[in-house]
Image 1: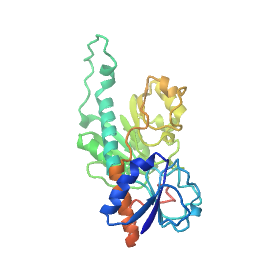
Image 2: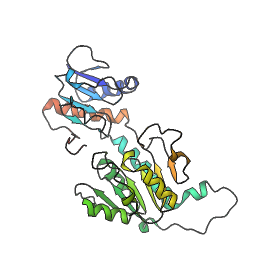
Image 3: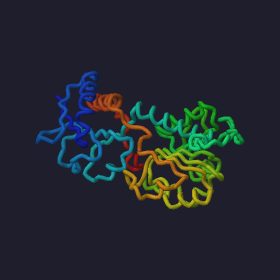
Image 4: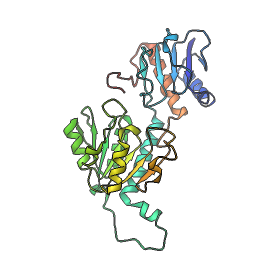
Length: 310
């Protein structure tokens, strides 16, 4: 019998345990799933931030830790976590992110806000948007989420360029890498999508200097991580008119405090970290498959590269 600990906030148990139990059975695994440490040994930890577990050295027999979050910045620096760590790449999360990103890129591309918020009797038909093939979109981050979004946008005929730290190839998407590639991706981005992980090298990546590389009136969609952007530099660029709009789903502090200037800025749309979510019905299958692999001595899916930070 395999023993697994669901180390997560208490609210996860009623939502996740039925799906995990079903997925384990479907994978042919006999698993005793536990909500709290009970003094016994555990083979695996299924982890989400916000629970009571912080010292992994108290669970010396654990073979691997399976994170339920796509981002691992809240756990990767824990010195007691010495066992293999995987991040969540959930098909449902990917689908949800593609829907959010394509929706907001289309919103900015088509200029929908002028009509949604302009119900004042004024007939605004003086600006006709270009076709998607004439709209330049750059996607920073070409992992599972960013790659899927770049492919979807290219499928809608947008002129898409993607950038990642390491060189990648995606059919239909011009892929750039390195510092020069980043500057090129920014300089042509009428709409910029941020889907990079948060690492020491990506914090404040969009500072005042890099924001100034964007074309006049460019729009930003950030469902990645809040600290990718320098907040003050962003507000200054919006106030000057250098940037047209920023749709932000993630922030340095969440929930975003009511007094934060993003709320009052007409150039900012705040969405409350809803771009996508890990869905238990699909994510549980990913956990079960990784546990099956571990038990079979196979390579784990989505193993975190601790040096890279994701």
